[in-house]
Length: 422
Image 1: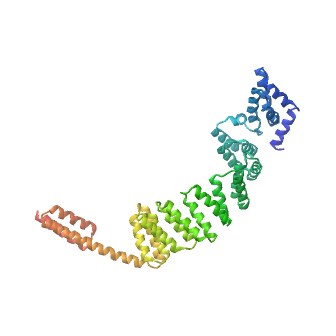
Image 2: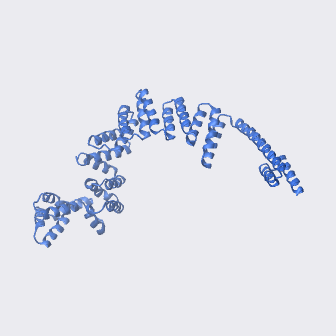
Image 3: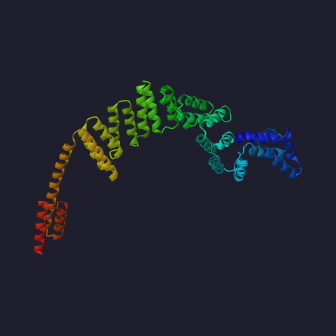
C-alpha cells in the first residue's frame, strides 16, 4: 500500500463524520485555549478538514475566517510518511515561507524523498502563485516523474485561473519530449487563454518553422518583429518564412529593414549574408558583406567572413587581399592565428599554397632590400653630419635585423671604422 493510501486511511479512521464542522465552529470560541485546541486538531485531520474550512471562509466572524484561511494553507499540503519532523513542520507552514525558502524546501523534499516527493510537488503546482517557485516545483517534478508532471499540467490547464501558464508549461514539456504537434496545440491554447508573453510566441513560432507551417510562422514572427524591432533573429526568421511561401519581394524587404534597423552593428551584414546563403543566393550574400565592409572597414569578423565567401566563390585574388585586410584588423594573436590557419586551409585545398608562399617570399625579399637600402642611406647621412652615435644605432639595427648575412658583415665593418676614428 502506498504512503498516500495509508495517509488517506488514517484520516478516514481518525475523523468521525461532522468532527471537522464542530471544530470549525469552535474557532470562534471566546476561549483562546479552545480556539487553539480546535486549530491543532484540524491540522491533525489534514485534508479531510478542507471542505469545512473552505465553508468557514464565508463565516461572518472575522476570527473564524482568519483561522480558516491560515489552516487551509496548512492542511492542503499532504505530509508524506517518512518525512522528518523538522521538514514536516516546515511543510505545514509552506504558504507562510518567503519565496526563496519555499524553493529551497521543495529541493530538500525532492532530495529527501525521491519519487515520494511527487504528491507534494504536484500540490505545489496546484497551489503556488509565485512563478519562480512554480517553475522550481515543475522542474523537480519533471526530473522525478515526467508523466505525472504532464498529467498535473493537463488538469491545471482546464482551470481558468491556471490555464495561461499551465498550457504554456505543458507545451514546453511536450516539445522537449518530441511531441511537436501536441506542443503546438498547447501553445495555441496558452495564447488563446491570454498568455501573450514573448517566450510563448517565440517558442510557438519556432515550432511552426520546424513543422513547415510557414504561414502561421510568418504571422507570428511579424508580431514578434513589431513587439521587438531591434531583434535581428526575428527579422531573419520572418524573411525566411516569406521566402518559403514564395514571397520573395517581402523577404527582401524584411531583410533590408534588418540592415536599416541594426546597420550600425557589423554583425547585421553577416546575419543578412547568412540569410541569403540559406536560400542559395551567394551573390546577394557577397554583396551584403561588401556593403558591410564599406560601412565598417576595420571590422575583423566582417572582413573574415567576406574573405571566406570570396574564396568559396572562387575569387581567390580578392579573397587573399581581404584576408590580409582582416589580418591588419585583428586585435589579438588568437584572431591572427585562426585567420592564418583558415587561409592556409583554403589555399591548400585550392592547390595554391606553394604559389602564395613563393609570392610572399618575393614580397618579403623586396621589403628587405628596401629596409637595407634605407638603413645604409641613414648611416651615410649620419656620418656626413658627423653624428657618430646616430650612425652606430642604424648599423646595430641592421646587424640585428639581418644577422649572418652580407649586410651584417658590411655593418660590422662600418662599426670597426667608426671605432678606429675615435
